[in-house]
Length: 87
Image (cartoon, rainbow, N blue to C red; front, top):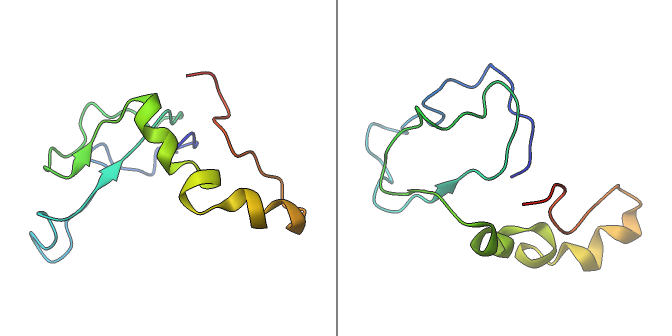
């Protein structure tokens, strides 16, 4: 989410583990990434690869998903709990 994806990422994006292992249970999504490897047009078409709206992806922001607002700020690590770019 909102990451720079370099060209070392192959266009299909994801590789299978042990042939078809976990195809029925995986959940992969990418959101608002940028860079030469971020184009999703040739990504794999597995059932668990999801395209999420900005409203739905908010549940995966660190502040909500891992309650990061409570424990990251005291560490002094640079942190933003919302989207970095306008979506």
